[in-house]
Length: 407
Image (cartoon, rainbow, N blue to C red; front, side, top):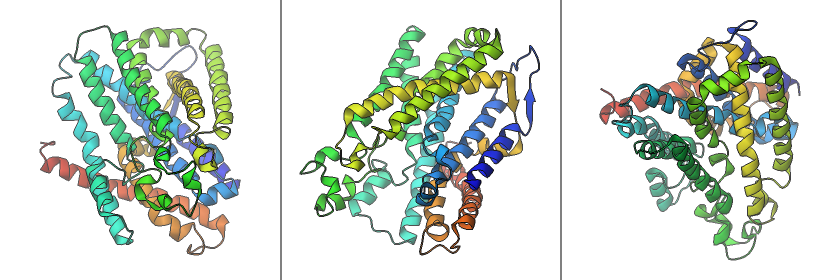
């Protein structure tokens, strides 16, 4: 567990370095400014990378970074919150904001998505991994996932389109919020019914548990292939809507917490921690992953957890926002990861695919002592992710320019 404590200390330093407390009886008025939001996105980006690392088998076996294994959706929620908040803030300050909105915003997420397909295609060819011809076609089109972490730009593109179509029409803001929630809910329901793979398409119950069943070898029957196969697609999206709600009622919400701030901050922390604790208990049993235990789709359990994680997501995001009213920190590391948050996110899985067989898995890993191999692996993953993110940004910008999206 020594490695875990080191990571805790480094994360704490990332939060404390450049920190500034507003002082007694005072609050930061720019606690949701662009700079501060970029800082928070940077912290979240680091958290996502550590989350991905914690899911590797050796870290699970040794019990290192356990707290990060189920925390990925909370880090991603901060991205969704900042997107929802930023969209409405721009709309409320610029009456012409929706003019050309899709032409401006969709390339920001869709071009990187398809550039990541190119990067992963090069990797698959380089390692001589076999893909069926139809799989190549569906991966390149984007119907299926070549980069299993590329779900975020897909969801964001859907939410951008929903925001545009809903907010360009007349109607009360509350009604528009309801429409946004219904779209978010539809994606959640889709996952709860679909599960992690095409469980309903097999010839027998729990067909995927039978290694002799030829269906277990079919590429399109596996997990992480089609859209929304996995809870990571849906359990943080509610923060997008919460960001919009917070922007609309920001003065009232912030005013409420500024009165008796210390007491309300503590109470909010306790409620958030309690609900996260309870939610994590249900994550272990019954959990989202009943299919892998041979218990069938367990659709009811998935619905239960989905609706438990929605308030957990909102409470966590709200606490971070309330905390920033009093304390903020802007430092070079957080600023860098905030600037390249999408790029590090899109390239991190590719880096993990490349480095894991070399540095983490036996018999191939070059450092046999796991106590040394694991910290070296973490350092290399971060360094390579940064390098790949810079290259990825250059290629994405070049493609945008070539397509006329950047002048």
